[in-house]
Image (cartoon, rainbow, N blue to C red; front, top):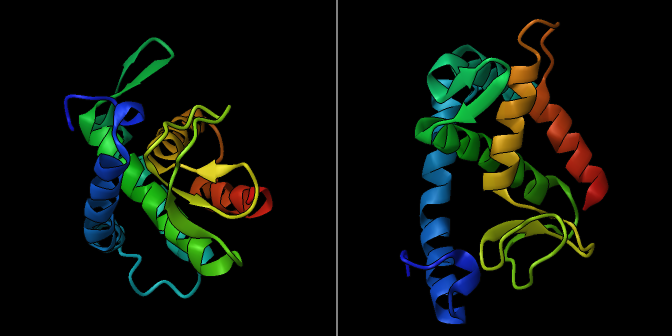
Length: 162
């Protein structure tokens, strides 16, 4: 299964990957939440702000830069994925009808078929690998600007889209 791209997986392979994903998801969320001191955050906005700030402080270890071009490294992919899992779980908890699913079709938003996504009734789907990389890029763009709560903005955007 791991020698093939997700879009080439059989239905059984996609289901096995989804079960593995469900087994590790909460541990990944707990790890980044603890590392960000966000376990006792009073609100989702505060929690996402603390995680955003942790990612911002860690950017030097999560990507390499050639001029203005950012290349996310392996650790950056993991941290971005974990941060996006927090957002995904918040969407599932707060958007009626949203749930973790296996993306069965390829859609125009570059989401790979057979990967876990948060989806509701719209054709849009929140895919944590893609959204994690996007969040890292958005946080990096603020390097010389007033920092914002990027993960909360991503969350609010997806609340509208789903």
